[in-house]
Image 1: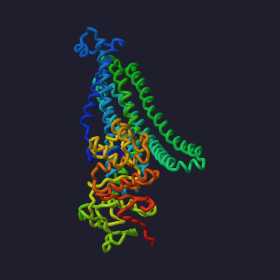
Image 2 (image 1 turned 135 degrees about the horizontal axis):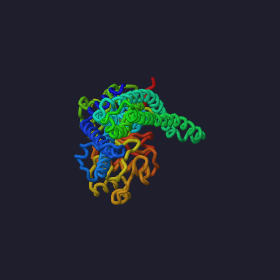
Image 3 (image 1 turned 45 degrees about the vertical axis):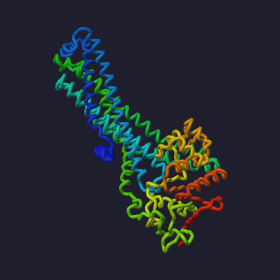
Image 4 (image 1 turned 60 degrees about the vertical axis):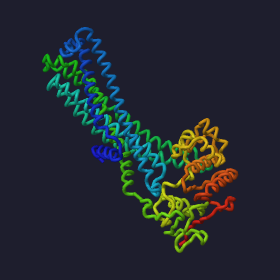
Length: 552
């Protein structure tokens, strides 16, 4: 993808997904930057004029008057420079908003996919692209494009002033600078693209390696591989650092070149024996001030062109992800084609899945599930327990089973995952996040129902922060699961689905949760996945669904 295609692709993607266009605002800010730069140059040139035995331009004197003109010029220069900083804040704001929009759109599109989509990518890839790679796109593509546009408008304004003041003579310096800018941008673009590939690959390897480390920590510790693990990570890190350091060096080269060109240009204008026109001599302060502002502006253009090449690999990865949204669009079961049935779920198996349930729940080739009671879903690892639950919840395309009739729709399900998810905040914040708005009395009843009434003062009255999935502020695993059962109780959802709610907790907590689950099932259907039989759990179920894969 070339530069123009990159810009068009990003702009189209953001616009198609509801991100507001800021092109007009960017144009006004860039024009404002150019005007402010002109004011800075004129005020600085006017301050320098007496030092070079040159008259202050008459239009400046007529505008400001001779009284305390130096103070007025200094004040104008200070104010104009301050306004320029303010314009730069606007540019940063545009870039940050674009980054936020990009990351949010990517997250929205990702989580809206069929559940099968997530089996095609590891979680590390999602995190890299939604956070790290989007940030790289922002730093190495969005910001450079915005800053190149801003700096180009400013540079055109300054070059226009130089031509106005010195005529064709200034064109020599401008042509030299323009040619140098082209050469610098071309060379740095090629080098930065190669560095970008190195950085991207090193960053990918770092993330994947860290993901493997954290998921294999016991293996590493038992075999005493800590030192080798760190050494291997250092190798990946060194490759990343190499690319980052050389990019920083690369961005300084244009500054060095343009500073030399500034001196050469001034020497050419001032010492050239063929230039004896009084108008040219009078324009020297303006030329010096304009070049003083133009050089860093051109440097910014060159640096950001370098960054464009550096960020290209990240954009290609992002573009590949966007294309996957189109090509891997696995359709979830369409509720329109599932006949509503208030009393039963009727389905049949489509593959080598065998479901063992009592005969009274079988009608021909269809299995029937009633609309009330406690239903355990059992089976060996890999037998398809969670897949079966996902398909009942309309999260997956119909592969293992084909639903003919159902009382389930996506609006009447409460789903409790195996790996629990809470947002960082108070319990009330979490209730609101799950769409539950209840008063303290209702919350207390729900917590008593889940046997965590002792936490009411801490979590509700004192509004203790309960953190996220990594930190739960002192809550045990069993208490966290009971918090979710309180949410299920308050949700008033007709169907409750629980993925391994009795796994990973002590027997006392398991017995408490089992009783709460049983109470939930007295008036509505409750499905729960488990590895153990109901008898081993001391739990009376209305239907024990045993799933296994048929051996071929």
